[in-house]
Image 1 (tube, helix red, strand yellow):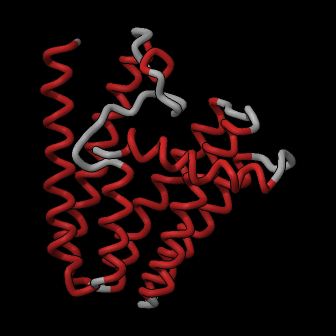
Image 2 (tube, rainbow, N blue to C red):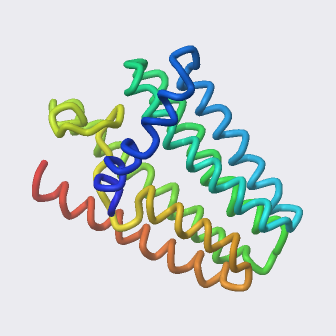
Length: 200
């Protein structure tokens, strides 16, 4: 919901870091480092090291923001880089709740609901994005910094960062937070369907 505004702020904050690193890195290398931290967060959550998992999650998100900024600063954007970035992100998004469910079986119902909503939500925004790109109404025409357009929803990147941080910071709230986030993700799907019905 707030991604567009915060993406501009993120670029302002991370551009000096990108310049400090110099031009010799690959943005994909930064994406892979972010991925390693994300998988580390899932592994830490699985063994019950929630504080460590939270730290790894926040580093993952910071590096995930840095890769795109770095690519723009040094004009190293590529469709392949954007594709790899989103694929790695979604592996991390799936693995952290899964790790929590595998550790605590009482989360099976709420965790399954959450993961199922992710599946449907991903189909809803990716297919809509493909249609918009095919109609030349995608990221470039909208002035978006992303590889392809990302139709907005109530739960996007910013909200995901907050929810996952809460999953890890307050374990006793996990079941409730899984249900709440899943319900909001369902609203995303309905919201996009309603928009598509009017605009396509």
